[in-house]
Length: 335
Ligand code: ADE
Ligand code: ZN
Image 1 (cartoon, rainbow, N blue to C red):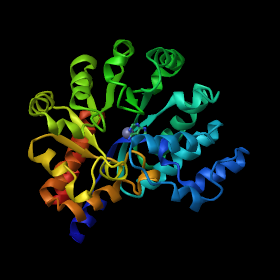
Image 2: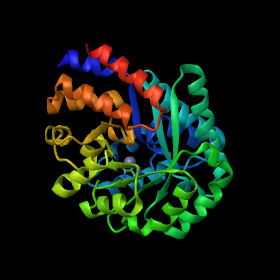
Image 3: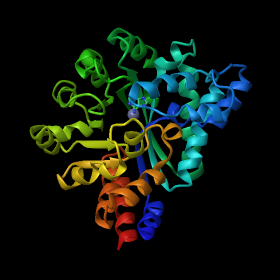
Image 4: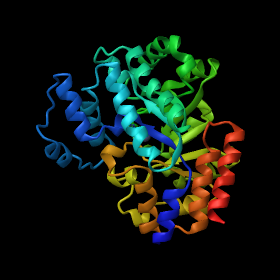
């Protein structure tokens, strides 16, 4: 088991499901709050950490939006992003595809340019320093209206050269993908890639909508696809990647025990499951911790570990040449 964990640390990895606002470590949150003279509801790091007990997605989101409220200036977005990139660079993550939630900041009068410039400059610096490549995904908050998503898309237009794709996140149940049909059509017309959180808490029907109506390029989470055999076949037919988040699933009670995590079942069914950290500062671990939890508790084999890492490469939006290079590196490492 320990040798598999060592191997998982050494593997070149991709992260395909990561909310940059979910990487806000309490220590950094308090430092930036002090710098910006923002008063947090919690008085100490310990008090804040003690609140990280969630029974569902909404419990977490309530805290997540409070946390991001200290981000005001471009440098705050830069520092947040750079801290995450430094962390995952040390874990052999070679390529990241990062979500940001513009509406979570626009609602506090933090303009779009401040957000995206801070995040993008950190990504570019990481690329220069370490050769770490990236894609940037603007995510719409699904508890808000489609009109608000359209307004956000409009604000993003001067920055479209920095944005690779769009996503859909926040409170899932009651906010199905079809609510955003027209805005995703507009995004597709602009040449953006499309992904959506579906089947984290929401029913298989929401995953059907994401595929059939929205025409997503990828599915974020997708756990509840396992309840519907026809849906499993459809996902396979379209070779869609699932960005699975094991520690997130445990913390948000999507699974009750890591031993019961369905990732092995997904692989056995031939689904392109990948491993990701979602909101690592809130869920108790970054990429290597997610792999270690799976290895320790679900007993994934060396072959399954290799498959997960390969799926992370093939399911990414990086160029084919780069994919081939990392797939070769993985093959050599596992030989
Ligand atoms: N926003 C940040 N993390 C999320 C998650 N796991 N599900 C939905 N929205 C989110
Ligand atoms: Zn997510």
